[in-house]
Image (cartoon, rainbow, N blue to C red; front, side, top):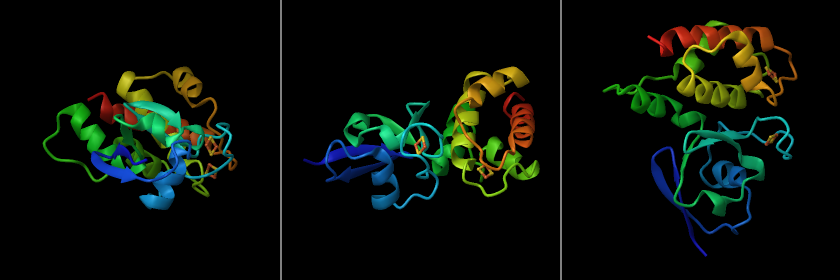
Amino acid sequence: MAIEITVNDRQFTTEAAPDTPLLYVLTNELELKGPRFGCGLAQCGSCSVLIDGVEVRSCVTPVAAVESRSVTTLEGLPALYARQKGLSDTPALHPVQQAFIDEQAIQCGYCYNGMTIKAAELLAANPRPSDAEARTALNGHLCRCGTYPRILQAIQRASAEVAR
Ligand code: FES
Ligand code: FES
């Protein structure tokens, strides 16, 4: 049975079994590099995507569950941001992505996808989060390199741009 999904504003049809994890379709069929397989158990956040703007762990989300819904991956964050802010041009990077670069917030990069997706979700709802609010939002996103202080700095840097 074909399943129609919308990913980063484009429609795709997959023949995958309905209970196939969305992550597998995104990486194996659509060849997206943003979401990553980490634990496969909804524990680390490396596979996170936004579904209708809400962060979801794609490793435990059946592809059938996202039919008729809008999936945004790391690759789609700039366009989503442009829409949210009413910008006429899509920036090359979402402010969170740029801030992670500016703050050198990443070492191995494995957590980058989930941290960025979660931070983008947070700033869309709360453009000026306190450090405590950012920490709470990131709870459940694991960084094995321990770059949490710089990630928090990056969120505050991005906040200054998003809240303008
Ligand atoms: S791979 Fe999905 S939460 Fe870890
Ligand atoms: S930078 Fe390596 S897991 Fe976070």
